[in-house]
Image (cartoon, rainbow, N blue to C red):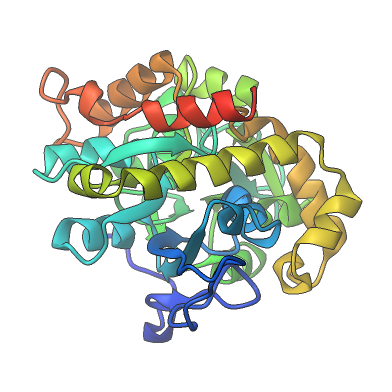
Amino acid sequence: MAQALWMPERRRFLRWTGAGLAVVGAPMVRSQTGAERNRVTVTVAGGLSLANLPLSVALHRGFFGQEGLDVDFVESLDEAQSQQAFLSGGTELVCGPYEQTMRLQARGKPGVAFVMLARVPKVVFGISTRKHATLRALTDFRGQLVGYGGAGTTSELVARQVLSRAGLRPNEVQWQAVADAVTGLHGVRSGQLDAWCNGDPAMTQLEQRSEVRVLSDTRTLRGTAELFGGPMPGLCLYATSAFLQRNPRHAQALANAVVHALRWLQTAGPRDLVRTLPERMFLGDRAVYLAALAKNQEGFSTDGVLAEDGAWTALRHLAANDPEVRLGRIDLSQTWSGSFALRAREQFRL
């Protein structure tokens, strides 16, 4: 059974500070007209992950404010914890992978995605060069230790698919849940992990130092299609249907701000990022962060809209790996509410 390398309690539901997005519990901000803004809280996993960059841009460029929103971001330990908070009613609004909406539907509480941040998973599967300097493929990888984000995460889905394509069943390797990027980096460098499936900027740092050999890369459209046989959506904002019905203006404002950020990212250069983001987001190494961004650039959504064929790819692969998700029992129309992203796309002429 997989166990976390390190899972300190203090990392559970941390509030994002200057290193990430916003501070929960800050005083209500008022607009220039003096009217109170609308406040929403979004649960997010992996606050400093580069995959969350559109949210950081929307915050620090003032796009949420332009839409009249105060957004509080609460960081969960991982995607599975965000999902559990959603199931338990602890949160109604989550930034997480699109396929989570299907897991939630299978468990009786559908999540409805309404704007996409990414059109690829943005996860890399790399083999430790310290332990396997000559290994080029996974055919001889039986019994080795694979680090991943935990049960029910995108990194697990990607790792399982990588192993499957190599002819390996999940029970032919050992699985190790990794609590965070710092722990994963240590696991690779200390020789504890034979392979690690994770996102950026951690994987780019390992690549640059030749500490991992990348066997699968879903930061790009090509790498994603090679692994999954088609487009595979990444992060989105999803909510309960009740939230969307009660708060259509909030949902539209969120979609507008995210699509605005996506549009800005299409033309932003390194200097723009350095001027926009707080220094702590670069984790002490701007060069690595910007190099990682270059690897991830095309994987961000261009307009916030979900590709229909991507939804089918996600369902097919999730059904093959999650016994709770069954083809024929998941209604894809209940996983996506496209009107918000379409209106935002029209507003920004994308």
